[in-house]
Image (tube, rainbow, N blue to C red; front, top):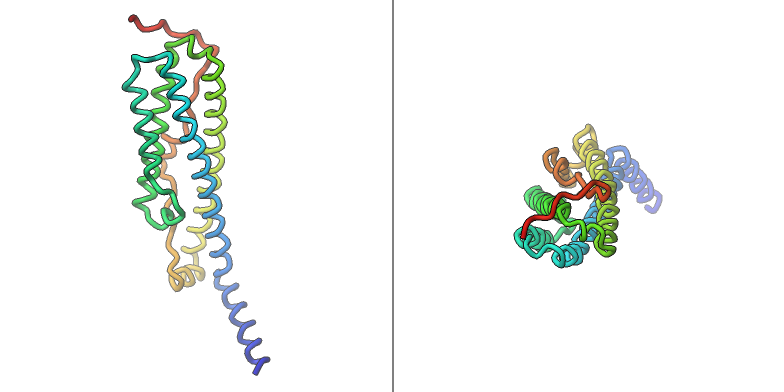
Length: 204
């Protein structure tokens, strides 16, 4: 009886291996790990925003609309729970993308404004925050690219025969990925060229 059970167990293991079940499990875990890193780096950026806004506010009181736009975009990002369940909900994933894209756009507008304030650009705290932001944007790009590749591998596996049969049997569906339009928007790290001559300060 024990030998029979062992034989069936061995056959079942061999069957799952050949049908791609183990590959699906491995790639699914890779997606979750890559997603966690994406979220972690986006959170790192969001954590920089309050200090960046406060730093800029001390020099650009008249730029309240731009500062408010960054603050609101950051709040919208914070309101979204980017749990692994988001990966099974294309609509929620799209909402996450849009919120991060809006924050990127708001930060870009803020940094364009700072070009008009040479005193701000020479402030040590501001320069330190900018260095942290640039480093974070680079980490976001790396983490996002890893996620993109992991999703591509997973989606290819579950759509290929015979692993597509296994995916259907166990309820695995294609995972959402970053769209081309969104990639263009959120992959452009905010940059400030401190060596470029500053524009004249706005008249008071």
